[in-house]
Amino acid sequence: MLAGTFSWITDLTDTLGDWASNWWFLGVIVLIAFFDSIIPVVPSETTVIIGGVAVSTGEAPYALWMVIVAGAVGAFLGDNAAYSIGRHWAPRFERRAERKPKFGVRLGWAHEQIRERGGLLLITARFIPGGRTLLTLSSGITRQPRLWFMRWITIAVVIWASYAAGLAYIVGKPFKDNHTLAFWVAFGTALAINVLIEVARHLRNRRRAQDLTVISTDPRH
Image (tube, rainbow, N blue to C red; front, side, top):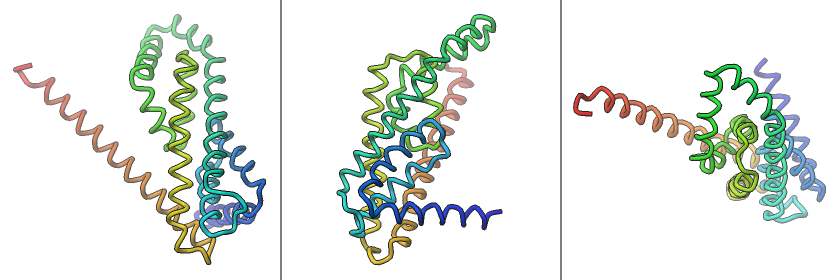
């Protein structure tokens, strides 16, 4: 099972790597980044990384900034599409909230959390497959202001695309004679960084929860 999955991923990255030597690969980046915002199984980071590696190894007929723009544009359009889907279903969630008070409380809590901390959440969620889709849908469901959403999403997608393409370019540079190895090194580095960020976020949240528990049980409070 694992071997079959790895083989499938290798075949996919090899195909995308072959495509990366063409101008139209920028369009592939836009499309995959778009659909990944709605269907989180589509490999948008992988595609942007391949584009960055292709530039660093000299195989691409385009520049690094074009890869960043393509990834950011596709992600921006996809996130807004996910927001619109959520907004379309908002009335149904609101009717359910009217029928079920507990659900209404949760929906209200989600609205306040996204409104108060949503900007930073939208940025960090962009680096979490599935997390970004959930948050963009939730932004629409809770009827967050469209302009507010677009402003934060613009920042998020630019940071995300610059990070993925820039890291691939820097890490892939020493392996310019081996495109496949350059990709796997860049992909592995990006994955390792994402894992470290998630571990740090988990530890910080756990420490914060422990601090709140101590405060709540302290008789002086």
